[in-house]
Image (cartoon, rainbow, N blue to C red; front, side, top):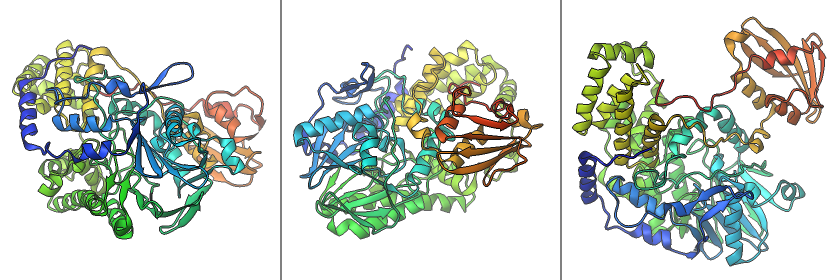
Length: 623
């Protein structure tokens, strides 16, 4: 892809921002550098076969003043987030930062080390642990804590321990209640669509550089190594619950339904240190991530931050999280957590105030402005979430997709709507002419709207594709939000170079293996092609010999229903197998041993014949 230069409109906007933002405040740089022990040199991590899964050195260009092609605030954030190495939080707590999208933390106990949130990939977690041991000694891993149910906080677990060590009792795995259920569901149910969109969100195929990917705000990008999962041996269920692990007391605070559906904070009295998981980071976080997820609740998010301040504030000397850098001293910690709390509470309350005045989501997103105290704090800026899309998420949470205007209740779908707009505007060439005028005037949002209609009318129209790519590129250059930039530039890439598919997938075998039978059957039900199955009437018993459990499946009216129950003697067929073998069947292996079918031998193949696989290369920016 040939990048285009920055337009004068974007350059002028960046000059104005550089003059208005508090760049003289360098305290974040001081905090991000504090406690530095050593860097991984080179900052490149590979698989055993030599394939690169993480390359932090590719961000070496992030120095000096922001170039015209990058929002100056995002450039600053990327400089901070790209810092890499082992850092001392306090004596006894160390963090590996810049090894993945997230941080890995090591807490020293009497005989070994407790690992918090072992990144996404086996390889990155192993590299971080090796660097820690190089400087702190060969301490064995005695426990792993998963702060919440997102893959960047558990996927690299095989890099720090093994299933055998956990099964033997040598290593304890601690997680909040509901961890497995939510970790599996998020990565499997809508995993194909989320993964495809995540390729846009993290700029997976974009070149690193001032005109390409410069980061994602929360971290630079995601690693691409082996993803693992180990079922917790200890589930935390109650705020105030305390456990001693290798001589280290840990006090837990439940925070479900915040940044993740299963999440917790925890405090180390010995170190006067508080881990805030991902609920207080140096950015406005997502209430609805651009890759897709359930809408998060900013109201309870702010309440759990208040509870954390009240519970731990007076006895905390440092707060750290699973992303970004720590904050030291009791006063600064309370101030930082209070600002984060006020940020989510303000967005929630003000959005609802305006909802009740009759405004809809897109209008509220333009109306809301943060108060000066929040606007002037770097940690509230929208590098990962944004005021714009978070406000729309709050509207969606309370009001749904419909804005109440009956003229918008039953619009045509995008392609049909586009044809009618283009015809009304005078044809494709006229739409492109109008879009070019908007582009030249620096009104890239309007140009994108016009060209969106044009390309959904004729996706191969050369002038439309070229100008839309140029327009998205300028929107990317101007975005403060790292994931917005990546979305815009990824769209430009696909328009110029073609569909790049899904570079990485979250439904890793280790995660799929943790599906409960109920979740496994839910995944099958989601895949049933309803119209193809309308005329089928199947009843199948599934007996799991390894789980000592039986389920009844019925497929009628295109709907697969499951029940945990005794086998039905009148069923079409009975399948006797193990859960791993049935997972293999779902992956396409119907011929290997370990699958016993009585009754109608064609029942399973009939069911499999009406299942649709997700498309990891569905179109996004074209119809």
